[in-house]
Image 1 (cartoon, helix red, strand yellow):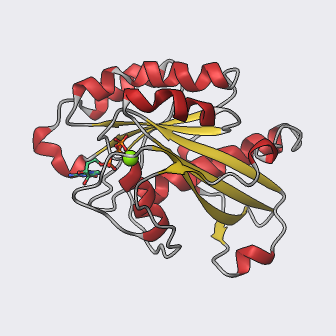
Image 2 (cartoon, rainbow, N blue to C red):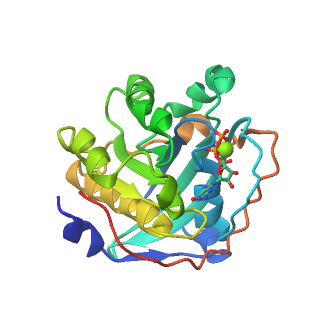
Image 3 (cartoon, rainbow, N blue to C red):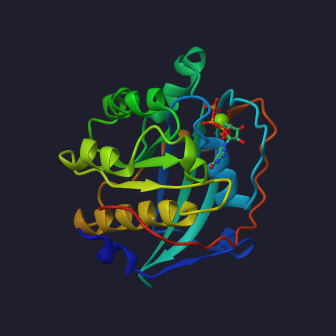
Length: 234
Ligand SMILES: Nc1nc2c(ncn2[C@@H]2O[C@H](COP(=O)(O)OP(=O)(O)OP(=O)(O)O)[C@@H](O)[C@H]2O)c(=O)[nH]1
Ligand SMILES: [Mg+2]
């Protein structure tokens, strides 16, 4: 699969309130993992509601947000995007929610080598809960802080080249590549669905009705209109 293959798949968002009345062909659970403070919550709030907060509180537990798409003029896909807490002390709560994920973003902060070094740990965690069947994308966030960069794009790319994991650099603050990251994931999962004939996609039934656990004040304001570019390496 190349970058161009992914980019060329049409993706049409079905905005509220219309998404309520549409029956999806399948639902997908996507989780964001990574150390505390790398920007997971802000990536999601930028994507879902086009908002950024300077001083976000650390996430406690988990919470999810929904979007509906028509992909490739073909299938209706609903995605649940699950935000998780990066802090070690909440691991026992959050790791329960890794199960059933079809896609996962592993996020690091390009100004924090430590968060980059921990990526493999997060990959192991998500794989362990899902029999290595999760599609992964690595996100290097905070590229607006390029002057404080500790991990070059090249270094990151080389680290994951052999594992064939796509990498994308983003800024939740500047709204750079955030849409692209989420849309790429939806398209990758769509292709996966097509590949196995739609068999392996009963993802959410065991978690129906759950809203996650989050004591923070995230809001699900479905009002995104963010579009930027420069992409990544696939
Ligand atoms: N400069 C810059 N700061 C960012 C960016 N994304 C997030 N931040 C800041 O980084 C801090 C942490 O962001 P969060 O989104 O709360 O991080 P998190 O990964 O959700 O952290 P946990 O919930 O503890 O796991 C906040 O102060 C954000 O404002 C970014 O793209 N650029
Ligand atoms: Mg958070």
